[in-house]
Length: 113
Ligand SMILES: [Cu+2]
Image (cartoon, rainbow, N blue to C red; front, top):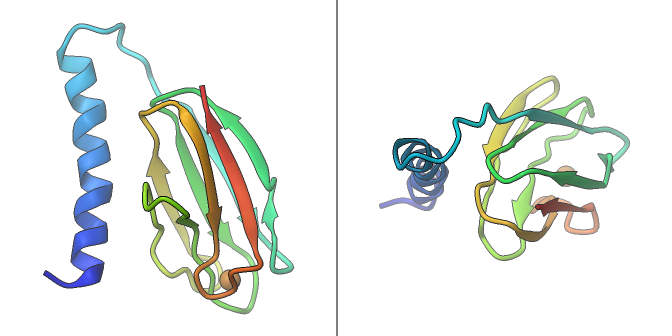
């Protein structure tokens, strides 16, 4: 399995986990989608607090390609060209520090409550 396939599988696993939570009788929670813009080699906002089950859509507005890669491997977006987006969903509470794997000095943090 290629690295990219594995990462895709990981993203899918989060979606399945969210679906499973719904099936197991927790209140149906329509996850909110939060927006993070990537501009000027920075994540905007760099710090974001969301609820478990919410999604974050990363959109790259820079000329350079970027991604968003969790330090602990919890998520990784596709490599985003100019104008492209990718959405991740986080179901487990925690503090997720992430970076752009292409430009590791670009950093952000998502807190899931
Ligand atoms: Cu980058």
